[in-house]
Length: 106
Image (tube, rainbow, N blue to C red; front, side):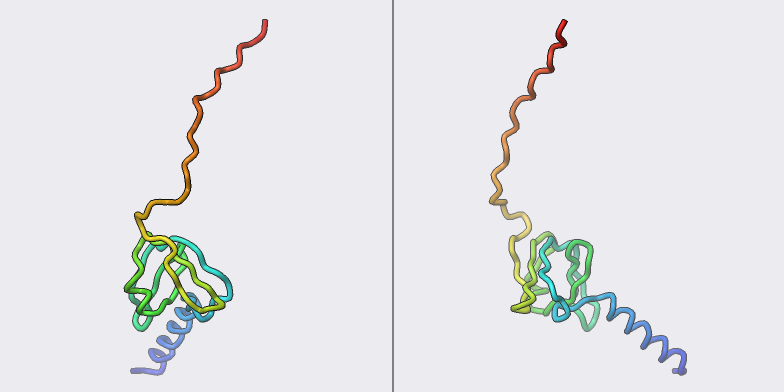
């Protein structure tokens, strides 16, 4: 393997490492829906609101696409807030019948 090939691999790995934030690097709360998950050896990746995050294997095998997840930077821990397909606690607003159109005054 030539020097250029080795240098190319090192540069590609550095670029990938900058694009893929790990949970240890997160300084803020992450809260959102899991859009996708995949393995990118040696990383286990979930995509939350179109942004990839490297997560521990134990969380990766538990979480499913469609789950709502949260990352707590103080505890350095991911958790599932709501499972995909689980009913919401939000009470729907009943829409009133539309008000009649105002009658033009003559």
